[in-house]
Length: 127
Image (cartoon, rainbow, N blue to C red):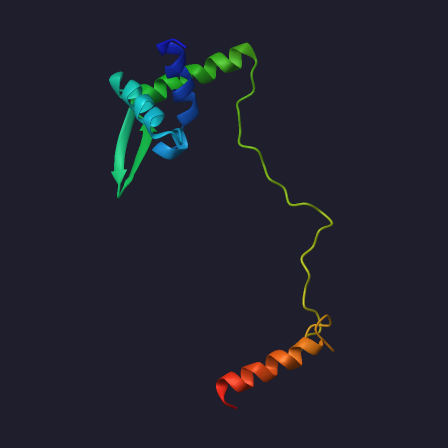
């Protein structure tokens, strides 16, 4: 892949947000290589927050990003948006209905292990 293609790819990938090096690439060497390439053309600003490097597009980089977005619109590609995660319907978490404070849920009522565990607990505490 030539340098221009790589620049376009990474500028689009960073976009309008701020990314950490790990978000750019989990491969440390690759992330640093990308960072050096984009810094070579003054397309990114890098801030260090503790041990984390945060990368965002500079004014020049944002101009490149807008041009890429315009090209995508001309070609007819929809702007990419993050996938929406919708909760599954029909799967509800069990709720403790009608449970008195200190009471037992229905699946524990009459369980013989509760007596054994209570006895062990009393012995351990010396009661």
